[in-house]
Each structure stands twice: as C-alpha cells, then as structure tokens.
Image (tube, rainbow, N blue to C red; front, side, top):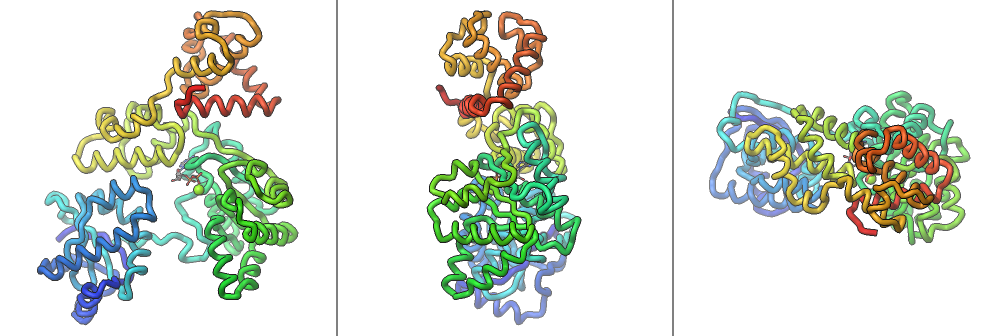
Length: 492
Ligand code: ADP
Ligand code: MG
C-alpha cells in the first residue's frame, strides 16, 4: 500500500499513450478518478516508456503556465513511473511533495490532461522514500477552483481572511471590504493599484468571494484584461458580440484585473468603456486593478481615464517588515508548518519588494526542509534563499541614511551630526521616518544613530514627515520614490 493522491482528467494525444489508454480502459479495473490501495504498478517496458512520455507531455504543458520557481521546486523532481489501468503513477520525492502537488497544482495538471488527451484517467503521486509508502490511503477530493463550479472565476482561497493587513494596504483593504459588503453603494468604481505581486488580484478576488458569500444570487464575474481581450477577439471572429455584450451588461459586480493591459488596444478600450457605462448606469459595482494609477496609464483615451478614476483610487505599497513577517507566519500556518520567529525575520528582512517573492521564498524553504527532513532554521533558510539574497541585500540603517543624504544633497556627517539648516533637518527627519517604516527600529535606536537624539525628537520627526506626506502629494511621491529606490538597492 502507498499513499495515493489523485487528479482526474482526460488522457493524452501521443499515439502510443492513447493506445495504451484505450487498452487499459477495456480492462476491468478502477473507476475513473478513483484510486485504490489494490492498484499495483505494472512497470513493464512499454508502460514505463508511456508513463514517462505522458508525464513529460503534461509537464511541458504546465511549465509555461506556472511560476518558474514553483515548477523547478515542485514539478521538476517528479517522474512518470507507470500507467496502471486508467491511472498514471507519478513518482515524487516524498509525501509532502505529493500533498503539495495535489493541493497546489491539481488544476494545472488537470488542465494539461484535458488539453493533451481524449480519454479520462487519473494521476496518482507516489512518494519515493520507503518511509512514506506507508499506511495512509488518501482520496483527496480534487480541489476545483470555484470558477469551474459557478462561472464566477473566483478562487476561494483568495479571501479577506487569508489577506494580512498592514500599513501598506490598510486603506485598500478597508475600501475593498466596504465594496464587498455593499456592491455599487460606496466607491464605484474602486480602482486598486500597486506593484507586481503586492496583492491586487488577491484583493479583487476577495471582494468577489465575500460578495457572493453574503448574497449568493449576486452576479459576479472576475476577469483579467488580457482574458477579456481574447474573449472579445473570439466574439468578433464568431460573430457573437451581442452575447459578449449581454454577458457583461447583466453583472452586479465586475472585477477587472490588470487594466494597464488596455494600453494601445483601442478596440478593447472602446468595449471597456461601453461595459463601464452600462454597468455604472445600472448601479452595478466595478473594481479595477492596475500596476499604476489611472492617469499614468499612457495612451488611454481621456474619457476612459476619467471613468476609471471617477470613484475611489487606492494604492497598495510594498509591505513593511512587520507585515512581511506576519504574511510569512500566515503562509506557514496555512501549510501547518512551524516557522520560528528568527527564520521569519531572516527572510522578511531580505525579501522586501513583493509578497509573491516572499511566498516563493517560503515555499522553497519548505521544500528544502521536507526533502532533507530538516527542521526550519536560519542556516537552512540561508541555503534556500542563497540566490535571492544575492539579489536583495538586506536594507540596513546605513543604506537608508546614505540614500537620504544623497537624495537631499547633504553629507553623511551633516545628516547624522545635528547640522541645523532647513534642508538638513528635513533630510534627517525623512531618514528617521524611513528607518522606522522600513526597519521598524525603536525611537531610541533611531535616536542613537543621530548623535543620540532624544526619542521625542525622533517622534516629532516621524510625525512631521507623516503630516507632510498627507498634505503635500508631491512630497509623498518623492518619499515613495526614495523609499522604493532604497528597497531596490538603487543609488540616487
Ligand atoms: P498582484 O496581483 O498584485 O500581482 P497577487 O494578488 O497575485 O499580486 O499576490 C501575489 C501573492 O501574494 C498571492 O499568492 C497572494 O495571495 C499573496 N499576497 C499578496 N498580498 C498578501 C497579503 N497581504 N496577505 C497574504 N497574502 C498576500
Ligand atoms: Mg495580479
């Protein structure tokens, strides 16, 4: 007996495999999609070749559709082992891999099966190490994204409950929650923007999930602008534009992701303009996301720019240290793994610019720990992240102070040693603010870096910069640029 995880789909188009599959379906055996402890691998020469080839085809299909890191970590170390009845057995390093693959990649593998084949069969993951080929027979239900069931294209795990809130995203989350509770009533449209991997898609999906949960009859639809474009092209080709229009016109809540993609696509812009107007006139809610604010999406027709930004525009910033730690802890809890504080700090201090990268680092560490059976420790994290760490040197206080000095055109000595000109005072205050925001240093620690300034002076500095940020958008933009430059390790 061994641990079995399975995924059901249709078989493969390569002739040898199809033959084997046809023959296999004639055999009395497993029901589609159900594996059993009585399944024994038939590791004959032909079956072996077919299984390998089939799994390679599946991997070729999946590779461009998932992150490179995810593929290298989880899928590359697997191998098609045998075709047994209607089951493709795939060898994986251990049961942890099997679990992970079935939880995170079943949709992709299923899509691959459907795409490369005609026939239904299952994939089962077989852990390689003897210790794992144990007792448990598991028939994990295939986790279909909610999208497949209700046509909303929502993924249930992208919820508000799974979204960690911090200073960097507080406003966006508050707006998103408010929209989810009363679609069409408050901020319409809601426009969320921010850098790559900072949670825009997650938030848009969370709005949809929450809205459907509170009002099951609500007509909600999530799509990304590039998918909308493909849909539009197909509608034009097949002469089904009316259906296309009707589909969107009838919605109560449209979540349109990545609208920066509209740039240069006039036909699509026209359509979005139309969809927007009909939904808005009907009091339906629209949520847009983008990697930049509406006015910075170049070559967008003026009237569309003004529509996009006509409701509430909120941004998501890169998360601060505390939020990054909280996100790591949350991911670990979801994976039921123990992540010690020092390891969380170690990763969070180094991976700063995107939550996706943070998540990727955690996944790598988890995979490494599971492969070697080691506990999760700082040296192991160091090993897991060694490529990343080279890219993202940790921000330390020297780098922040130096960047501020350069930005304001003052010397390092003057900024730290109490020079009193206006320019120096502002440079110092900004440095204190950024030290607090980026490294979460205490007021006392920050004071210590500036000729032992008193903690009330530091507090005053941080408050002044915070006030200026609110009152003066140009200053806020400058501060943001400076802060991002520091994160990316740029010199001025
Ligand atoms: P974007 O659409 O902005 O590029 P995503 O929404 O796809 O980013 O987020 C990237 C990954 O990071 C997703 O797996 C998402 O669940 C996760 N993520 C982003 N922000 C948070 C957060 N605040 N809390 C928990 N997970 C987050
Ligand atoms: Mg996204």
